[in-house]
Image 1 (tube, rainbow, N blue to C red):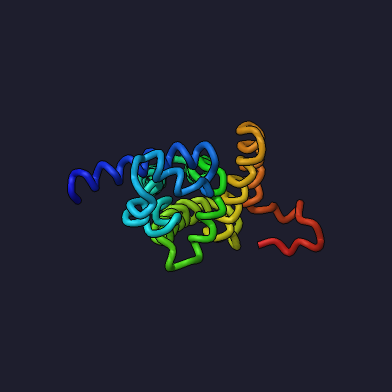
Image 2: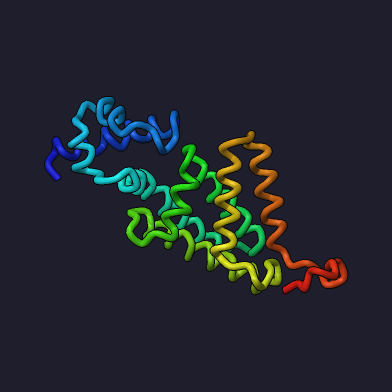
Length: 192
């Protein structure tokens, strides 16, 4: 990339970060281009879609989440490792209003620029989930897709409530992944 193109790229990312934090992922792309001092055509030249812009912005943070999951695989407590990673993932997914929705839809859309990154996050979470399940800390029927749907819901809720309440609701969600002891199951609950 030429030096001037690299500068434009970096300015666009910096302005997108500001705009998305202020107004969410649906912030005006025209305003982002204007604030970066470039034309909308230059923005689209670098980022053909809003999702491509989001992917470029999130690339490093998603890589950090995957690396965190890898580090947590050696944590002495599989349950605590899963909890820490779920909290980090929910915080990441709620960085910008509307991001949780974008990530959930990208998880299913192979044509989305965010698809690969979402698949990496899912695989990292699956390894932590499998380790917690092997330790008897997670229901047998709970899969990574279930966990991500719940984390996504918690991230969406964090956009609507205080951080304290968002963290409390995430803790409730994580408690729901735990196996239910046989003697406390309701008759209609066949259990795992």
